[in-house]
Length: 396
Image 1 (cartoon, one colour):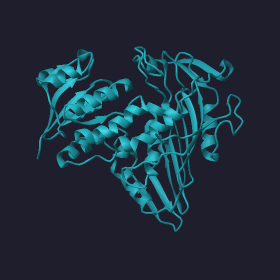
Image 2 (cartoon, one colour):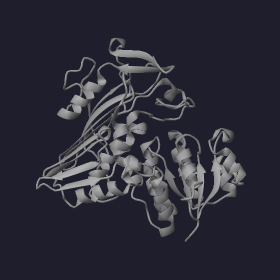
Image 3 (tube, one colour):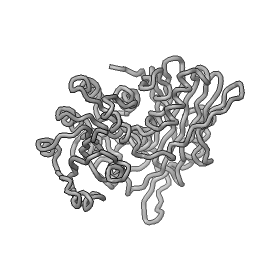
């Protein structure tokens, strides 16, 4: 079996999952060629890297002067994804870049083209696209097991505190503290994978996600100390007259909303409710039932293992730039020039376990009602809601 060499570009925060995986017994015939981290001594596995004589650099360009690898895993701030991914491609590495692809849509298009220029792949870390049963579900949809898709909808709103936003210089920012475009929001980062899952499931081939034709969006900023929105509700129209609805937020006055999904078809439906401990359950109009394992039952590093295997097989992983572009197009299309801020009368400012929170009063109930009735908050007459902005999706 071919030994695959890997450079870790970023090794703290979420990237520690990759470091842990590559240091585990599961990493057979896999070599960590080098690690790049701006503050090496602060990364969780620093002492282990040192004990194993794994080179550690603070600068990617300097690392690449001395090392080549089959695969580079880029898990750094959003504003660095493009430049670091391109640099790794130029150095002969395929790339697994964390979601989202990058900050600028034009850069994402260049990354897509760069795969052909350099003969390497750029995989994007939307984790749900790599899990075996999620791929089985997509195959069933593509085969017409449930009939023509009618509506995909999801609600997912994990609460976030001020500690979350203060952990770095870009969380909740449109532009990071060092002036780099970031567009960090629930839709673009923390909750992006469930929006992408719906787009991915709508695709006509395994590596395709449908590009929406139109979008309506309500975006609001509840937390006064961040720059971008922390509440969003969107409705998109996909080709084939498929409706997509997504409700997501970080600003709740109580514990958040765990993922709930409902994928409706002419001859069946697929449902998922994280809190009920159920799998994704598909039911056809003729009474057949199918189960698909819950995402959290899988190894979070599955995308890494898939990319390593793709290197060995000279293949391409299922989720590439092409697959992730529709998500990014939505993010850029709905981004408001001025983010609407909700009046303080609708906001609960509170502390819990010595941490600070801002919550939109009644949001949990509104979002659940929206999900059940296929509406946006404005449709339901929420006191704080404003008429959604409507967009035609431009694909170039």
